[in-house]
Image (cartoon, rainbow, N blue to C red; front, side, top):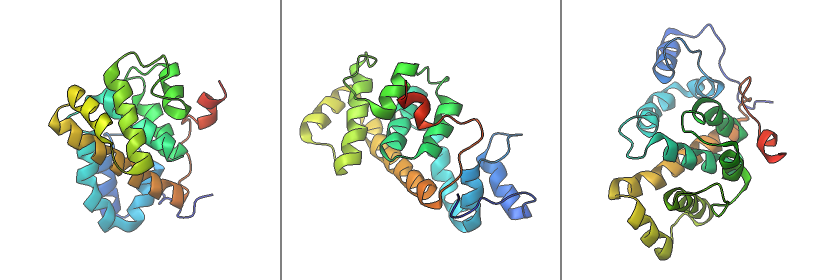
Length: 188
């Protein structure tokens, strides 16, 4: 049960205007955004950063972005945000069922990771989650595969999704209808 219930329509004009900037045209706002809208100044302030992380100016392609996000959300135990990203982006990111399972409860050494870049990205996400740092050996490997912009984007993307996961979990945002659940991939 939600600790902070999501706002329900009808919305005030200022809330409706803000929510409209956060979703594709014609799509109703997700529960997380309706929960955030209970603190409208915060929601307005964080929206440009969220647009950057999901937008075309992020230095990482969609597939790598989603690998980092799904791994971060799984490591944080945030079924809500993990499920939303899996539902919306996994097919566009061309993630296989084995890769989704690996990101959720596996390892960068799983055989589904056939590129060193993707395995290194997962290692970076895990290191950031576990120690808030990347050791020198992993950093050297990452420098061979990612440019400086990407090496700056990766920790900030992971940090952003840690914050999103913290908020979604502590507010107990209710799962989106039809969104996958951890058990859907961990029971396989």
